[in-house]
Image 1: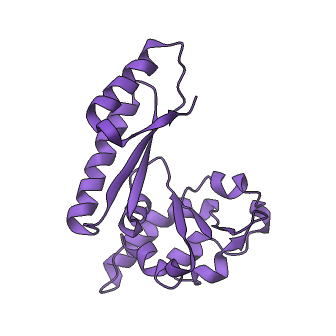
Image 2: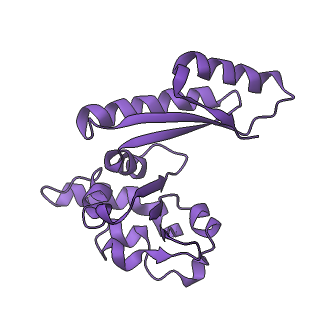
Image 3: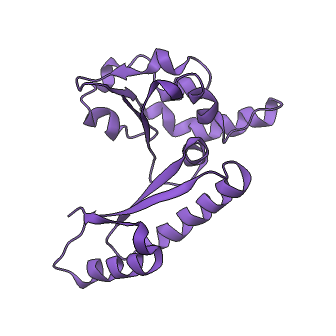
Length: 188
């Protein structure tokens, strides 16, 4: 049994598993602001044993709402809301996969705090190496303050254009740094 949690306001994971965004009554946003429990927002997909906690555009303002809530409520930790919400259902699933937005903020911190491990997708382009450094800093921060058990599962190279030297150089740099943590499969 697998639960996909869509933490990206664009909601591509949600639509990617066949959910019409117009049919969504409750989403991960409602869960994280405390309006409902995960079980109320989860949707069973047409695929056997696959459920999704969908995202809507409301998620775009979540960072600000969680920061405000943490200022006014004692004991409220803006970076641990997903972990707290998952307590009720985590043993129901064999795997919980969290799709994060391409930015490092409170939403991504929630995902890293709630996770056992992280897969780092890296586009085989010049600026991707810059993003890896920022992500690694975030992972180290989460490991030292919120989730010491978090580990890097692996690095997944994506969007390779094998006709360009830059793509091959990125692969070489990533393999040099991450060594055996780089998955063998490269997504074109």
